[in-house]
Image (tube, rainbow, N blue to C red; front, side, top):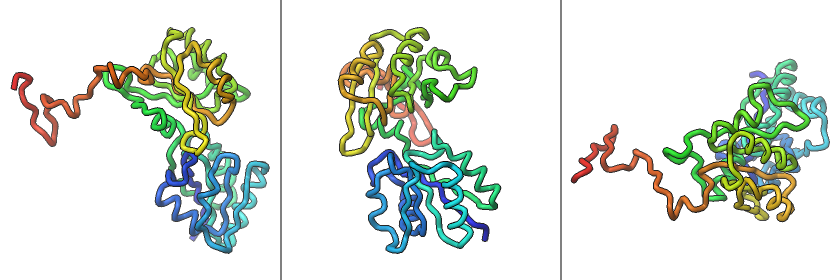
Amino acid sequence: MSPLVYIIGAGPGDPELVTLKGKRLIEEADLILYTDSLVNPKLFQNIKQEAVVQKSAGMALEEIVQVMVEAAKSGKKVARVHTGDPTVYGAILEQMKKLAEEGVEVEIVPGVSSAFAAAASAGLELTVPELTQTVILTRAEGRTPMPDKEKLVDLAAHQCSIALFLSATLIKKVVREFLEAGWTPEDAAVVVYKASWPDEKVVRTTLGNLHEDMRANGITKQAMVIISKAADKNLIQHGSYESKLYDKTFTHGYRKGVSAHE
């Protein structure tokens, strides 16, 4: 059997939001290497007594890979634990590449993304029928450049739900590009700081007040910013957008619809 590393999504913070498979693998692991600034250490309360738990925030890529390779090749079960879902801004490709060069296989275990945890905390449906049916997961351009066809102003022009990772320090730029793309200062926005953690904070605002409200709440990191027509807090009281799924006149494979006049 080839040496193997499990890359596990820890979810957004609440230790109950890890998958059952992720929890089992963490508890069976001989080595747990985790992003300590973002992963809740409560996930490790029921691990093996002899398991080694190591923080990776202060380690370079080569150090992280070396630790995993040595453990995996010695027959140990290795759990590389990432925040949220590791396939979204997880920086896992570079790890997988170097592990492959060392003959170590990888299995990815998905997790709950902070984008969806934030939407849940804010009580949002990101895909409201006839209002918005698309969700874009992206970030503002900072030190890492964006591909030419993925500039924020171009993505924002779609006028759909947009969840912004890693963008809390670039909000002035975000607002400017959304306005340039045709959004208005009155359009709804929600900021969720540390979604699902005990000190979570949900700030409902508008595009025009986004920067000021984030500053007033001291939010400069670990924040998910969602800009969407679906973030309008008045939709629950006054919205009239309904799907066909539960419409009594709509026929599908499990139910025959009735006439609108019945």
